[in-house]
Image 1 (cartoon, one colour):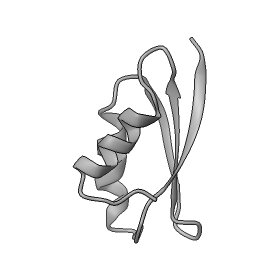
Image 2: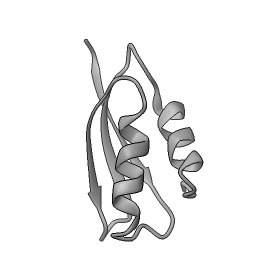
Image 3: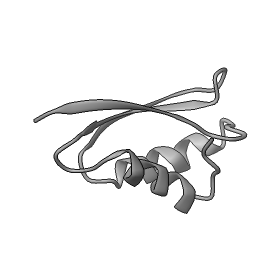
Amino acid sequence: MKTSTAIISIQELTPAALPVLKQAFEAVPGVQRVDFSLERSVAVVEFDLATSNVDDLLRAALRAGYKVL
């Protein structure tokens, strides 16, 4: 298994958004860990490259109603 880390900038990341985004990212196959930095307005997502890719993660954030930068 080849793991990669994506750092995704999310517009207007707030504490209220974290549970929604965490659930959205974890629904993507292969996602192993999700962390956030409110100060930097980013999500840090570890995922399996054999199962998913960065585009899948970006789509998950968009479907959850958040703009990615």
